[in-house]
Each structure stands twice: as structure tokens, then as C-alpha cells.
Image 1: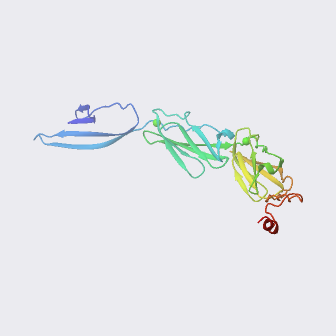
Image 2: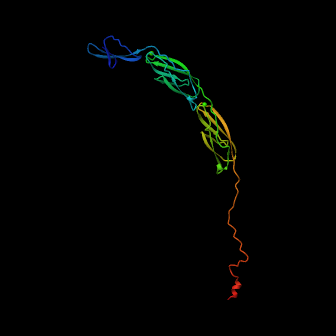
Length: 268
Ligand SMILES: [Ca+2]
Ligand SMILES: [Ca+2]
């Protein structure tokens, strides 16, 4: 009669004592040989169970705007303070937004779509499948809103025009934010719009236009400013006609190039 706990650990005898060094469910096999040398095998599960774990999700967590990227808030949570007598094998998180995630290590990174506060649940499990649950909160706090500034000409004359279109450049490079600007949205006052920090537009008529710049930081906070630009023409064009030059009139005392006909007859 032999008892096998692992391929290299075998006991013989009707009864035995085995010391488990960790929690979990283990397969134990009994190899039996009767008096007629017939063999049979039976297996069973042995569950080794210590104390349940203690869940500690950390927190409450408060993160700033540096954790935001294009209105998505990302943070790493740490359950390293959770404990168990033999060790935690699984960390399951409920992020409060309807999604869950699992990991075999205490840390986990997740992204939320707004600032919360989010009620976060942590479930830890040891090798014996004993569980413990705890909660914390995750909150994101936006920083300062951005400040929009337009750099561009106030007056654009005909030197910038070509084929009836005035080309004008504007820049939002002087706009500021405590963390960073996500978006630049432009309205040029003539119905056209644009995006990006540095933009070029074309006006098709003289006049004064109000340019509006709206900047958005990664927390979704906005600020708008305006800038007036006047499009003008220079002096009106002066038409000039170039044609054939007039020939000079012949002088009266000049002899005709051809002699009169009757005088020619007298010399015959
Ligand atoms: Ca345990
Ligand atoms: Ca900001």
C-alpha cells in the first residue's frame, strides 16, 4: 500500500502523516496491491486550509490631473498591504464603473472615464480559496483650467493676398495649462473652423473678423479667447493701355519721294 503526494514523494503503510507547507488542494493517490498481486488505484483531493486572508486595497486614493490623458483617468492601485498566513494567490478588483480585473500580484492599473469618486472593491483569495473583501475610493481632482492666447496679425493687407484670398497664420503657442493642453479649436469668424496649435486660414473678402480660440486641457476644462483681424486691400489698381505709337507727320518742305508726272515728261 503506497501513498503518493507528488511523483517523487511516496509513503508506504496503512496510515501515514504528511506535513503540508502551503495551502491549497492537492491530489493524493493510494496504490494498493492485494494478496493476489492485483493492483488498484484511488485518488482523492486533500484541501489544506489555514486562516483566511485580509484584504487591504490601499487608499482612499486621490489623483491629480497628471493622471488624465484626453479625458481618460488612469491610476495604479496597490493591495500590497493585504496579508495571508500562506500567501495570496489572486487579487480581484471591481473598479466601480461596472468593470473588473484580476491579477496575481498586488498592483493593478485601470482607466476611468471621469473623475469619480469611484467605489473600488478588492477581493483577495488564498490558495485554499478562502476569500476576503474590502473597499476603498478612487477620486481624480482636476488642476487649474487652461488659459487660451492667440498670436496673430491684427491687420492683413494686400501683400498677403493672392487670387482674391488672404492667407493668415494664427498660433496658440502662448496658451498655458498647469499640466498640458489637449485640444485647440478655432473659429475664424467667416464660418471656417480649424484644429491644432498652429493654423493657417484664408479669407476671401475684406472686412474685420473675430477669431475665437478654445483650448481644452486633459481634464476637459476649457477656456476661450478672441482676436480681431482686419483684412484690407491697398490702393485701387490703375488701368494702363499700351498700343502702337503714332508715326510723325511729314514736314511741308520735304521733297516728295516721287516726282510729279508732268515734269518728267518735259525732259523727253
Ligand atoms: Ca490562508
Ligand atoms: Ca489643467
